[in-house]
Length: 352
Image (tube, rainbow, N blue to C red; front, side, top):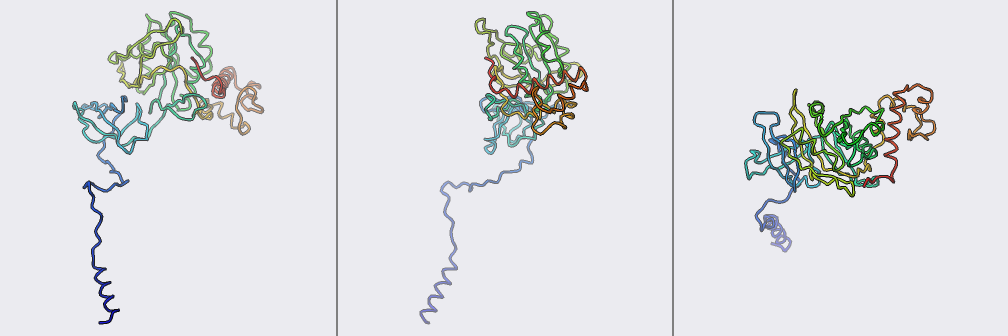
């Protein structure tokens, strides 16, 4: 055998050696980015969030309807999960004491109500998902009503495609007529409420078949209204500071409650009171889109038209000047311009 033949034999021996993988000292499976499909996941409504734990309703409207406590899966750590979400959950969904299910996905949302810290902040604070109505609660006095804050709620609702409603409380303390003139021209259903005459049945009728988020400044009586509609809610109520005129935050979290009335049921979503509502995330086109008949005329506007009172060659303003809008249309234009101006005014965004 030549030295060349000997080398060939060595190579053959080397090829036959089985390559061993490095032992796993922890004896666990290697990490993978693949996640299970969770085909057996149940759909549940998220009712509330508290310190990383989610209360969810399983088998909604079925005989076995019950609540479960859940946490989020690791892969959802960067996904906001909020009240109103339709979540996919797995694990122990019995709801028995001491059990904990796991949220592994979020169904597509029909709407998303958001706000930012101020008008220049592009970071969104998600308030609630899948609501189709917003009930704005404002007091006629104590604290004094702030029309510009209400405007901001309306802009956020229109941007999210949510129908706005308005409740004016404490009308036994002051006449809200002058305040309500500010909203003439809007398709806005208005309720008035006094301490001895709270229109629970009328408001309740507007809630049936809907998921309604309640918003308002602290101290306006929002929690009192929620308790009147859903006695089991037992939301804490507070008072207004006589020195500052500000209300004390009594609702510290966003929670869903089922309202049951004659003719059906709906969902009341109570939110903490706020004194400011940033619109940094809003698309002005969504505000115009809520004024359907004006949006059609705006198709003839020059590109980038603001539709404000000083906008050159604005087709809507020209139509109003020519009397083509009528009295009602002129009121609608005034309301549209007021809301657009509220969005455009970046300097006046605090209401303390």
